[in-house]
Amino acid sequence: ELTGISPLSGAHYPLVVMALAEPHLKVGIEYRPHVFDAAQVGAIAGRLARILELLARDADTPVAALGILEDDERKRILTDWNDTPAATAERTVPQVFEAHVARTPDAPAVVDGDRTLTYRDLDERANRLARVLAARGVGQESVVGLALPRSVEQIVSLLAVEKAGGAYLPVDPEYPADRLAFMLSDADPTLVVTDARIAAGLPESPCPFLVLDEPDTAAEITAASAEPLASAQAGHLDQLAYLMYTSGSTGRPKGVGVTHRGVVSLAADSCYAGGNHERVLMHNAQAFDASTYDQWIPLLGGGTIVITPPGRLDAATLAAAAREHDVTGVVMTAGLFMVIADEMPEAFTGVREVWSAGDAVAPALVRRVLDTCPGLRVVNGYGPTEATMATS
Image 1 (cartoon, rainbow, N blue to C red):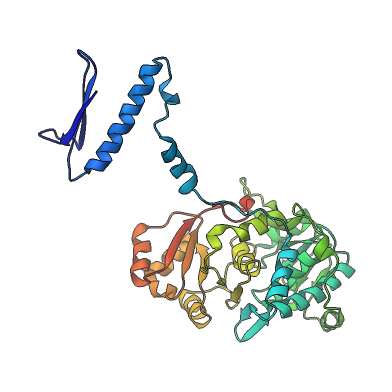
Image 2: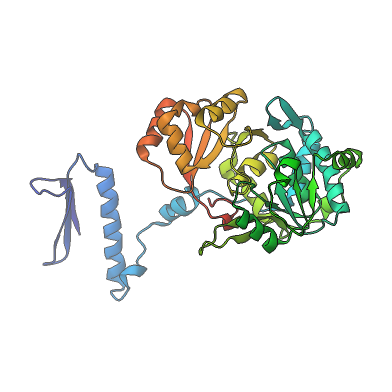
């Protein structure tokens, strides 16, 4: 018997449950009204009554097996509040991209300073390079190293690798020579796509280099057909899309292979819907898995990549690029986010959503950014490379 619910009379606790066992069980609840309201305490009382009724029916029921939720509450928590169905990947990376080319050929795909490539432009340039790659032996799941600065050419190259059926391997020229040599030896790429400046600083490797700005190579690419290769449509979802090296749990670099299914499923996640990720700032190093967001979320969603200048960036450069090109979405490390939040929170003005990734961030700095940029959404995310950048 539930004898009653009333505001507390004299006890020091916010909520008190009183039970008397004789002549039969009586339960009463008192509460402090500045901590709980009557509806909340009524819900607690209802759950308690439900547990007692279940025990009365079968006293041998383990406590862990008692269900305290009504059917409508269970549905609300598990279904209504968790309405996050994941789209099922049905097409490969080139197939999803080419669907956007067919749908919006003149929409901007890549902005790099004063250069803009439409979806048609990007598709044609990637098709030409894909044919050159195929002529050099790149086929299904061939690993192709990409050692290029942050640029239009980098985006064209990674898309060309996918169209040729290969898997790209980001090669960061700023890595120590020993690490680069290990990666190239371990992954054994069919070739490395690079430019003359970066090629001069790469360690010696048995794999050939395709130097994009060599005159003969540039002429070969220009002369190639802009029609897509058959391999762009012949791939399968569990085919490798890219290979990315982490530091490894022992400090020895470890290659992580990610499939087309992983990339397409990431881009189709509902957390990127709604317009906040239409124009994405590309600033992360390509060998860092956050680059997956920079590149594929916009390209596979019909949006635009806004490329920041090559090299290391400061808050002012990021802010200028975001402001000039109406950037809506940014992913950055927690460390970079906290530096910008502390020194220049106005850098996020106009941006709709910022992801701070890889570590916890100070709540006070998040509040500083939100106070400076009302309407901005800040997400503190985390995800290992093996999870295709992030989990949601």
